[in-house]
Length: 151
Image 1 (cartoon, rainbow, N blue to C red):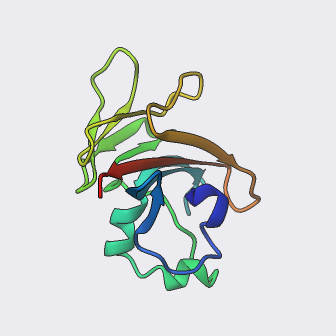
Image 2 (cartoon, rainbow, N blue to C red):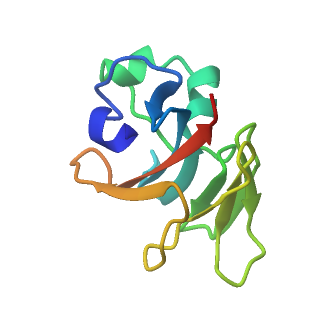
């Protein structure tokens, strides 16, 4: 799982994780939740499609520690806690489901499974939720989602 093998800010550059489970080719797609303070000291958070960000950002700066991975209003879901401003955007990998009685959900576009980010709920089929202890951010959680494809 991404949360077991990759530390966000000190990692080897990998864009897609492929592996086999019981003869099936599997792809790992992860959502990273980050809560921190911006340069104005406002608390902000976002759910980041890791695979999508790998295609849009130069991660060498993150991996070398020169730059922090930080929430953006273009991520899957972004919230500025001080200004009460939220945005949501689907990515090539996930559809955002914001208008739901269960709260915020993400639907994987490959296998159509739902990822529930409510910490009190089960994250969903083929998904694990792993809190990350760090001094670099206020709060980090990684949701690892495994997509199985028959071979």
